[in-house]
Image (cartoon, rainbow, N blue to C red; front, side, top):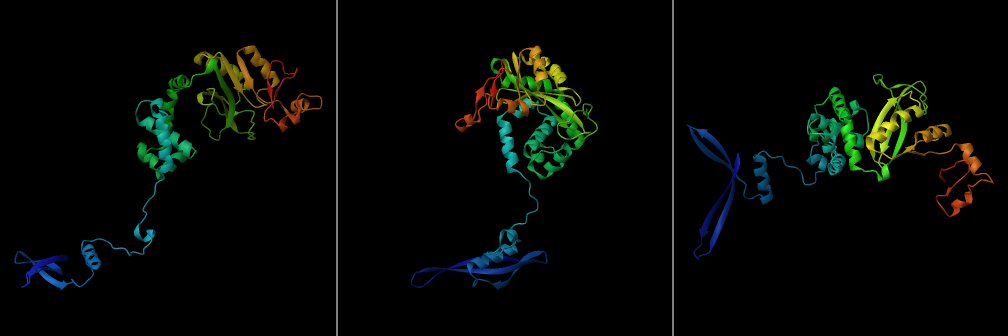
Length: 325
């Protein structure tokens, strides 16, 4: 079935010309090997919009009421998260992250997907693989078919190039006067396959849980440059000795500033750091020491903060140190 529009011109006796237009509903059929047509009806009396609707229906198009809502017009088969991932990918491109990670390959695509997933939705590797299946991330990087084993293999590939990557980061973020902050911290581990995860003194309230320790080197603005992981039962002074000297030699640091909480950088450990030389530290005194400084005859006057946000002072108990409140 189809609609045929015919036009016939007619000239009256007075010379005026008219055009007669007819819209005919016809069907085509074959008879004795010949194609013939049959007029089923004349729909010329219908409004123009109705005639077009008949044409559309006969072409197989689905018509929707003008008052139908979006849910009736469009059927949402599947929706993938995209916008925030695309924004993160643009920033990664401006930072040159892909070139920093390594040459173009399957492993680099997996690492880039892992990095962006870590930024947007931090989770375990297994959870990330499940999560990115419902986003445009896996499709864009071509890793939709990746499994957990392949992801961990990509991390091994990345670990093999850690020294090169850290050297490029150090060159990208130069240090003024050879000074760089360094922090030693720890994290508890629930897995059972990490050889460095052992029982140690936990400051996370996870007694009896294995942990790892790690030292992080940054540039003066706090951007990470290098990291090293230690066994979870490594004492802080031992970790300092194992990490500080190699890092200073590797990156050519004249001075290194260690950042730690009051439980990590104690008075005894400060004396050990002084013996190493070329090391500064940033920490906080314990509560009794602060109370002594804020006593009536102490140098810390709370009235200072009526007009100032920060105050710097000295005290004989802390020779050569800056105290900031």
